[in-house]
Length: 443
Image 1 (tube, helix red, strand yellow):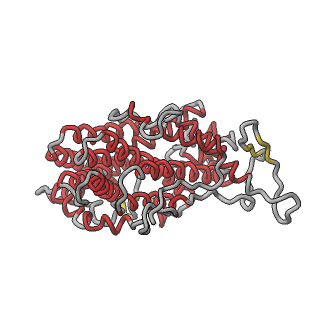
Image 2 (cartoon, rainbow, N blue to C red):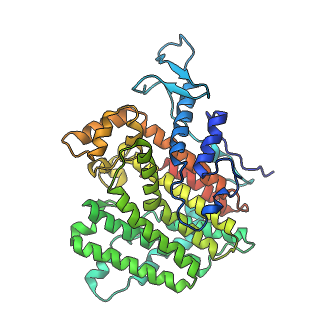
Image 3 (cartoon, helix red, strand yellow):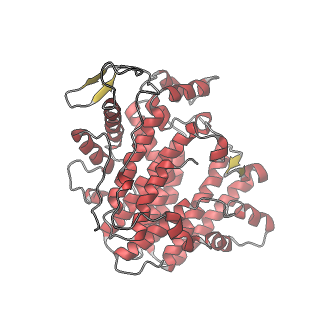
């Protein structure tokens, strides 16, 4: 017998749990179905006024969860660090440093529940048929007679990428098709959007590598290292122009407008990354909005675009957008964690990259609350000798990594809630499974 989807998270505390859900969605007491409708279609839902509250509430839940796992008084072999409670039931740890043995990291158990009698489907298996010729189709779009330009453009389209974004787009398209009483097969325009999403993403990587002076990407030497910065910039521009032409051929003005927003967000996000904020609350809001613009906007708007082609209901468009937004932000949060926890061979690029670039990501911002010394380092972008090493050590001695992981879990929880509003299908269940894969990935 099929069972309804239930969000099941360990270590929740009533009032805090409600507030977290509200703040993640920007609902604040309104209907939990589509309170974000006032922002629909604007592309401006990257970071609502409640985003900083997400962080605070997640911290409260995180520490509350760890506190409830404390041993009974007198239990041997474990520390007895004092914990105090506030009038609202939130827990505050009094020690500056964490114990590596006392508390486990909160882990989601929601992905263990299913929507139907079948197990959650493997996303890669379900999307494989539609992605088999993805890179061949991209190379056809990039066809040029000049051999050097062709080599530049084909360099990252060698079939060795994860194709994470096209996979989400394909699954969302098929889930929306089934929800709209059609068969699951992709429409030609939906297939094109999956291809375009990978082209825009890759072009942004080429430009990012030039800005950051990176020498490794996906385990290979970057384009700017092989051919130089000028040619790398031109190659990225050419890939974007080819994606724009493919987008125009879809022939839907709304889709063109939605995906054009992605390119604007990428540029604005890059400018945001070049700056920082003095105020701690503003700094976290700045960080989350930057994550949306640089990473989640492409996923969110691509998901929205494929839903537009098959369904005229704005609520369905919002479901697709919000799923992509929340998964995209979670993906970037996990990526920021991996910069501290994964070795270079796993990532395909050097670790501690963000610190070396002067960037304060989630683990650093959380660690700053336990180690105020990080504040000055953040403002000078870790430019003084020894800053990177000290900041790295502070993060490892703090709860920064665990709290960033927990925040990613909350975004995935909201992604699951959104996609669960669609009619049951293997593709919808695969998108649910995908949230677990985002949280557990190691590269």
